[in-house]
Image 1: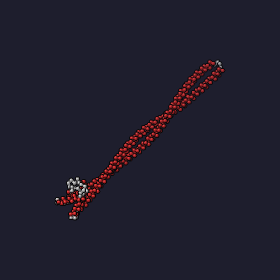
Image 2: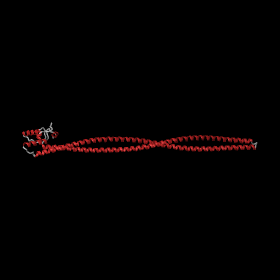
Image 3: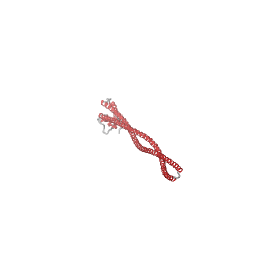
Image 4: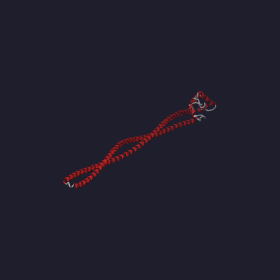
Length: 346
Protein backbone atom coordinates (compact mmCIF):
# COMPACT_ATOMS: atom_id res chain seq x y z
CA UNK A 1 0.00 0.00 0.00
CA UNK A 2 1.37 3.46 -0.98
CA UNK A 3 2.35 5.91 1.74
CA UNK A 4 1.00 9.43 2.05
CA UNK A 5 4.37 11.04 0.99
CA UNK A 6 8.15 10.64 0.69
CA UNK A 7 11.12 12.41 2.24
CA UNK A 8 14.24 13.87 0.72
CA UNK A 9 16.39 11.11 2.20
CA UNK A 10 14.16 8.41 0.62
CA UNK A 11 14.47 9.97 -2.86
CA UNK A 12 18.27 10.36 -2.48
CA UNK A 13 18.69 6.78 -1.32
CA UNK A 14 16.60 5.48 -4.28
CA UNK A 15 18.54 7.66 -6.77
CA UNK A 16 21.89 6.49 -5.48
CA UNK A 17 20.73 2.88 -5.76
CA UNK A 18 19.73 3.42 -9.42
CA UNK A 19 22.99 5.16 -10.28
CA UNK A 20 24.97 2.35 -8.63
CA UNK A 21 22.99 -0.15 -10.72
CA UNK A 22 23.88 1.78 -13.88
CA UNK A 23 20.34 2.99 -14.55
CA UNK A 24 19.19 6.52 -15.36
CA UNK A 25 17.52 8.03 -12.27
CA UNK A 26 14.37 9.31 -13.98
CA UNK A 27 11.29 10.35 -12.07
CA UNK A 28 9.38 7.16 -12.96
CA UNK A 29 12.39 4.99 -12.11
CA UNK A 30 12.85 6.69 -8.71
CA UNK A 31 9.12 6.43 -7.99
CA UNK A 32 9.17 2.75 -8.94
CA UNK A 33 12.16 2.19 -6.64
CA UNK A 34 10.16 3.85 -3.85
CA UNK A 35 7.36 1.36 -4.38
CA UNK A 36 5.17 3.67 -6.50
CA UNK A 37 4.91 6.05 -3.57
CA UNK A 38 5.04 9.83 -3.64
CA UNK A 39 4.05 12.55 -6.04
CA UNK A 40 6.04 12.93 -9.25
CA UNK A 41 6.25 16.67 -8.62
CA UNK A 42 7.76 16.09 -5.17
CA UNK A 43 10.21 13.51 -6.53
CA UNK A 44 11.21 15.91 -9.31
CA UNK A 45 11.81 18.69 -6.77
CA UNK A 46 14.01 16.45 -4.60
CA UNK A 47 15.98 15.25 -7.62
CA UNK A 48 16.73 18.85 -8.61
CA UNK A 49 17.92 19.61 -5.08
CA UNK A 50 20.16 16.53 -5.17
CA UNK A 51 21.59 17.58 -8.53
CA UNK A 52 22.13 21.11 -7.23
CA UNK A 53 24.05 19.71 -4.30
CA UNK A 54 26.14 17.43 -6.44
CA UNK A 55 27.22 19.82 -9.14
CA UNK A 56 24.71 22.52 -9.53
CA UNK A 57 23.69 21.14 -12.90
CA UNK A 58 20.63 22.69 -14.39
CA UNK A 59 17.62 20.59 -15.01
CA UNK A 60 17.24 19.44 -18.55
CA UNK A 61 14.61 20.97 -20.78
CA UNK A 62 12.78 17.64 -21.15
CA UNK A 63 12.47 17.26 -17.38
CA UNK A 64 11.11 20.81 -17.08
CA UNK A 65 8.58 20.02 -19.80
CA UNK A 66 7.73 16.79 -18.04
CA UNK A 67 7.22 18.63 -14.75
CA UNK A 68 5.00 21.19 -16.48
CA UNK A 69 3.02 18.46 -18.21
CA UNK A 70 2.65 16.61 -14.91
CA UNK A 71 1.44 19.75 -13.21
CA UNK A 72 -1.02 20.50 -16.01
CA UNK A 73 -2.21 16.91 -16.09
CA UNK A 74 -2.75 16.92 -12.31
CA UNK A 75 -4.64 20.21 -12.54
CA UNK A 76 -6.79 19.01 -15.44
CA UNK A 77 -7.39 15.69 -13.71
CA UNK A 78 -8.49 17.44 -10.52
CA UNK A 79 -10.72 19.91 -12.37
CA UNK A 80 -12.29 17.12 -14.42
CA UNK A 81 -12.87 15.02 -11.30
CA UNK A 82 -14.43 18.01 -9.51
CA UNK A 83 -16.67 18.80 -12.48
CA UNK A 84 -17.69 15.17 -12.79
CA UNK A 85 -18.59 15.01 -9.10
CA UNK A 86 -20.59 18.26 -9.37
CA UNK A 87 -22.43 16.99 -12.43
CA UNK A 88 -23.07 13.63 -10.77
CA UNK A 89 -24.40 15.32 -7.62
CA UNK A 90 -26.59 17.62 -9.69
CA UNK A 91 -27.72 14.67 -11.80
CA UNK A 92 -28.62 12.67 -8.68
CA UNK A 93 -30.45 15.66 -7.19
CA UNK A 94 -32.34 16.37 -10.41
CA UNK A 95 -33.06 12.68 -10.88
CA UNK A 96 -34.53 12.49 -7.37
CA UNK A 97 -36.55 15.67 -7.93
CA UNK A 98 -37.70 14.32 -11.28
CA UNK A 99 -38.78 10.99 -9.78
CA UNK A 100 -40.54 12.77 -6.90
CA UNK A 101 -42.31 15.19 -9.28
CA UNK A 102 -43.19 12.36 -11.65
CA UNK A 103 -44.63 10.30 -8.78
CA UNK A 104 -46.64 13.31 -7.58
CA UNK A 105 -47.91 13.98 -11.10
CA UNK A 106 -48.81 10.34 -11.60
CA UNK A 107 -50.68 10.41 -8.27
CA UNK A 108 -52.49 13.59 -9.34
CA UNK A 109 -53.25 12.00 -12.71
CA UNK A 110 -54.71 8.92 -10.97
CA UNK A 111 -56.78 11.17 -8.67
CA UNK A 112 -57.98 13.19 -11.67
CA UNK A 113 -58.97 10.03 -13.51
CA UNK A 114 -60.80 8.70 -10.43
CA UNK A 115 -62.59 12.05 -10.06
CA UNK A 116 -63.48 11.93 -13.76
CA UNK A 117 -64.87 8.39 -13.38
CA UNK A 118 -66.86 9.47 -10.28
CA UNK A 119 -68.27 12.48 -12.13
CA UNK A 120 -69.13 10.24 -15.09
CA UNK A 121 -70.99 7.82 -12.79
CA UNK A 122 -72.85 10.72 -11.14
CA UNK A 123 -73.66 12.10 -14.58
CA UNK A 124 -75.08 8.74 -15.71
CA UNK A 125 -77.18 8.48 -12.50
CA UNK A 126 -78.53 12.01 -12.94
CA UNK A 127 -79.37 11.30 -16.57
CA UNK A 128 -81.24 8.13 -15.55
CA UNK A 129 -83.17 10.04 -12.85
CA UNK A 130 -83.94 12.78 -15.35
CA UNK A 131 -85.23 10.25 -17.91
CA UNK A 132 -87.43 8.62 -15.21
CA UNK A 133 -88.83 11.98 -14.14
CA UNK A 134 -89.54 12.91 -17.75
CA UNK A 135 -91.41 9.64 -18.25
CA UNK A 136 -93.38 10.23 -15.03
CA UNK A 137 -94.16 13.79 -16.15
CA UNK A 138 -95.41 12.50 -19.52
CA UNK A 139 -97.70 9.95 -17.77
CA UNK A 140 -99.02 12.58 -15.35
CA UNK A 141 -99.71 15.00 -18.22
CA UNK A 142 -101.56 12.27 -20.13
CA UNK A 143 -103.64 11.42 -17.01
CA UNK A 144 -104.37 15.11 -16.49
CA UNK A 145 -105.53 15.49 -20.09
CA UNK A 146 -107.80 12.41 -19.74
CA UNK A 147 -109.29 13.71 -16.47
CA UNK A 148 -109.96 17.14 -17.97
CA UNK A 149 -111.69 15.54 -20.96
CA UNK A 150 -113.80 13.35 -18.66
CA UNK A 151 -114.72 16.37 -16.55
CA UNK A 152 -115.87 18.24 -19.66
CA UNK A 153 -117.95 15.20 -20.77
CA UNK A 154 -119.60 14.91 -17.35
CA UNK A 155 -120.37 18.63 -17.37
CA UNK A 156 -122.08 18.30 -20.72
CA UNK A 157 -124.05 15.27 -19.49
CA UNK A 158 -125.10 17.18 -16.37
CA UNK A 159 -126.27 20.11 -18.48
CA UNK A 160 -128.27 17.72 -20.68
CA UNK A 161 -129.80 16.09 -17.59
CA UNK A 162 -130.78 19.49 -16.16
CA UNK A 163 -132.37 20.51 -19.46
CA UNK A 164 -134.23 17.17 -19.64
CA UNK A 165 -135.46 17.61 -16.03
CA UNK A 166 -136.69 21.11 -16.83
CA UNK A 167 -138.54 19.75 -19.86
CA UNK A 168 -140.17 16.99 -17.77
CA UNK A 169 -141.18 19.50 -15.11
CA UNK A 170 -142.72 21.68 -17.82
CA UNK A 171 -144.64 18.68 -19.21
CA UNK A 172 -145.79 17.76 -15.70
CA UNK A 173 -147.03 21.30 -15.10
CA UNK A 174 -148.91 21.31 -18.41
CA UNK A 175 -150.47 17.91 -17.62
CA UNK A 176 -151.53 19.13 -14.16
CA UNK A 177 -153.03 22.30 -15.65
CA UNK A 178 -154.86 20.26 -18.28
CA UNK A 179 -156.26 17.93 -15.65
CA UNK A 180 -157.37 20.83 -13.51
CA UNK A 181 -158.98 22.51 -16.51
CA UNK A 182 -160.69 19.25 -17.39
CA UNK A 183 -162.00 18.82 -13.87
CA UNK A 184 -163.33 22.34 -13.84
CA UNK A 185 -164.94 21.91 -17.23
CA UNK A 186 -166.52 18.62 -16.19
CA UNK A 187 -167.88 20.11 -12.99
CA UNK A 188 -169.42 23.05 -14.81
CA UNK A 189 -170.85 20.80 -17.44
CA UNK A 190 -172.45 18.50 -14.79
CA UNK A 191 -173.97 21.44 -12.98
CA UNK A 192 -175.41 22.83 -16.17
CA UNK A 193 -176.78 19.43 -17.14
CA UNK A 194 -178.33 18.96 -13.67
CA UNK A 195 -180.03 22.35 -13.88
CA UNK A 196 -181.08 21.97 -17.43
CA UNK A 197 -182.55 18.55 -17.70
CA UNK A 198 -183.23 16.17 -14.90
CA UNK A 199 -184.37 13.82 -17.52
CA UNK A 200 -180.96 13.53 -19.01
CA UNK A 201 -179.50 12.08 -15.80
CA UNK A 202 -178.84 8.77 -17.34
CA UNK A 203 -177.26 10.33 -20.38
CA UNK A 204 -175.25 12.54 -18.14
CA UNK A 205 -174.31 9.59 -16.02
CA UNK A 206 -173.18 7.86 -19.17
CA UNK A 207 -171.22 10.89 -20.15
CA UNK A 208 -169.95 11.08 -16.56
CA UNK A 209 -168.72 7.54 -16.82
CA UNK A 210 -167.05 8.44 -20.07
CA UNK A 211 -165.59 11.48 -18.38
CA UNK A 212 -164.48 9.36 -15.44
CA UNK A 213 -162.91 6.92 -17.82
CA UNK A 214 -161.17 9.81 -19.55
CA UNK A 215 -160.14 11.17 -16.13
CA UNK A 216 -158.84 7.74 -15.21
CA UNK A 217 -156.84 7.71 -18.41
CA UNK A 218 -155.60 11.19 -17.62
CA UNK A 219 -154.77 10.08 -14.05
CA UNK A 220 -152.83 7.11 -15.35
CA UNK A 221 -150.97 9.43 -17.69
CA UNK A 222 -150.31 11.78 -14.77
CA UNK A 223 -149.05 8.83 -12.67
CA UNK A 224 -146.80 7.83 -15.53
CA UNK A 225 -145.56 11.38 -15.81
CA UNK A 226 -144.91 11.47 -12.04
CA UNK A 227 -142.93 8.24 -12.28
CA UNK A 228 -140.93 9.65 -15.16
CA UNK A 229 -140.35 12.81 -13.12
CA UNK A 230 -139.18 10.71 -10.13
CA UNK A 231 -136.85 8.75 -12.42
CA UNK A 232 -135.50 12.01 -13.80
CA UNK A 233 -135.03 13.32 -10.24
CA UNK A 234 -133.10 10.13 -9.37
CA UNK A 235 -131.06 10.50 -12.54
CA UNK A 236 -130.39 14.13 -11.63
CA UNK A 237 -129.25 13.06 -8.15
CA UNK A 238 -126.95 10.47 -9.73
CA UNK A 239 -125.64 13.12 -12.10
CA UNK A 240 -125.00 15.45 -9.16
CA UNK A 241 -123.18 12.63 -7.35
CA UNK A 242 -121.11 11.95 -10.46
CA UNK A 243 -120.38 15.68 -10.73
CA UNK A 244 -119.26 15.68 -7.09
CA UNK A 245 -116.97 12.73 -7.79
CA UNK A 246 -115.61 14.50 -10.85
CA UNK A 247 -114.96 17.59 -8.78
CA UNK A 248 -113.10 15.44 -6.25
CA UNK A 249 -111.15 13.95 -9.16
CA UNK A 250 -110.45 17.50 -10.34
CA UNK A 251 -109.09 18.44 -6.92
CA UNK A 252 -106.96 15.26 -6.93
CA UNK A 253 -105.78 16.21 -10.40
CA UNK A 254 -104.92 19.69 -9.12
CA UNK A 255 -102.81 18.11 -6.37
CA UNK A 256 -101.10 15.96 -9.00
CA UNK A 257 -100.47 19.11 -11.04
CA UNK A 258 -98.83 20.65 -7.97
CA UNK A 259 -96.74 17.49 -7.62
CA UNK A 260 -95.84 17.79 -11.30
CA UNK A 261 -94.71 21.36 -10.73
CA UNK A 262 -92.53 20.13 -7.85
CA UNK A 263 -91.18 17.40 -10.15
CA UNK A 264 -90.46 20.00 -12.82
CA UNK A 265 -88.59 22.09 -10.24
CA UNK A 266 -86.61 18.99 -9.24
CA UNK A 267 -85.89 18.31 -12.92
CA UNK A 268 -84.57 21.88 -13.27
CA UNK A 269 -82.30 21.32 -10.24
CA UNK A 270 -81.11 18.00 -11.66
CA UNK A 271 -80.43 19.63 -15.03
CA UNK A 272 -78.37 22.31 -13.24
CA UNK A 273 -76.47 19.54 -11.38
CA UNK A 274 -75.98 17.79 -14.71
CA UNK A 275 -74.50 20.94 -16.25
CA UNK A 276 -72.23 21.37 -13.21
CA UNK A 277 -71.11 17.73 -13.42
CA UNK A 278 -70.33 18.15 -17.09
CA UNK A 279 -68.31 21.29 -16.30
CA UNK A 280 -66.41 19.37 -13.60
CA UNK A 281 -65.77 16.58 -16.09
CA UNK A 282 -64.37 19.12 -18.57
CA UNK A 283 -62.13 20.59 -15.84
CA UNK A 284 -60.90 17.08 -14.95
CA UNK A 285 -60.08 16.42 -18.60
CA UNK A 286 -58.17 19.73 -18.81
CA UNK A 287 -56.26 18.81 -15.61
CA UNK A 288 -55.43 15.42 -17.13
CA UNK A 289 -54.09 17.15 -20.27
CA UNK A 290 -52.03 19.55 -18.11
CA UNK A 291 -50.54 16.67 -16.10
CA UNK A 292 -49.70 14.85 -19.32
CA UNK A 293 -47.89 18.00 -20.51
CA UNK A 294 -45.96 18.17 -17.24
CA UNK A 295 -44.95 14.53 -17.65
CA UNK A 296 -43.70 15.34 -21.15
CA UNK A 297 -41.72 18.31 -19.80
CA UNK A 298 -40.16 16.11 -17.10
CA UNK A 299 -39.19 13.57 -19.73
CA UNK A 300 -37.49 16.38 -21.69
CA UNK A 301 -35.65 17.49 -18.54
CA UNK A 302 -34.58 13.91 -18.01
CA UNK A 303 -33.26 13.77 -21.57
CA UNK A 304 -31.33 17.01 -20.93
CA UNK A 305 -29.84 15.58 -17.73
CA UNK A 306 -28.87 12.42 -19.56
CA UNK A 307 -27.14 14.61 -22.16
CA UNK A 308 -25.30 16.40 -19.33
CA UNK A 309 -24.34 13.04 -17.91
CA UNK A 310 -22.98 12.07 -21.31
CA UNK A 311 -20.95 15.30 -21.21
CA UNK A 312 -19.65 14.32 -17.78
CA UNK A 313 -18.72 10.93 -19.18
CA UNK A 314 -16.88 12.83 -21.92
CA UNK A 315 -14.94 14.67 -19.19
CA UNK A 316 -14.05 11.30 -17.67
CA UNK A 317 -12.89 10.18 -21.11
CA UNK A 318 -10.76 13.35 -21.23
CA UNK A 319 -9.22 12.34 -17.91
CA UNK A 320 -8.43 8.91 -19.32
CA UNK A 321 -6.83 10.57 -22.36
CA UNK A 322 -4.74 12.77 -20.07
CA UNK A 323 -3.65 9.64 -18.24
CA UNK A 324 -2.62 8.11 -21.57
CA UNK A 325 -0.74 11.33 -22.40
CA UNK A 326 1.00 11.15 -19.03
CA UNK A 327 1.90 7.54 -19.77
CA UNK A 328 3.21 8.50 -23.20
CA UNK A 329 5.36 11.30 -21.78
CA UNK A 330 6.73 9.57 -18.69
CA UNK A 331 6.89 6.04 -19.93
CA UNK A 332 4.99 2.78 -19.23
CA UNK A 333 3.76 2.56 -15.69
CA UNK A 334 4.82 -0.28 -13.53
CA UNK A 335 2.77 -3.44 -13.68
CA UNK A 336 0.15 -3.45 -10.91
CA UNK A 337 0.07 0.34 -10.63
CA UNK A 338 -3.45 1.76 -10.70
CA UNK A 339 -4.88 5.22 -11.35
CA UNK A 340 -6.08 5.34 -7.75
CA UNK A 341 -2.48 4.81 -6.51
CA UNK A 342 -1.25 7.57 -8.81
CA UNK A 343 -3.91 9.94 -7.45
CA UNK A 344 -2.99 8.98 -3.87
CA UNK A 345 0.65 9.69 -4.60
CA UNK A 346 -0.30 13.22 -5.60
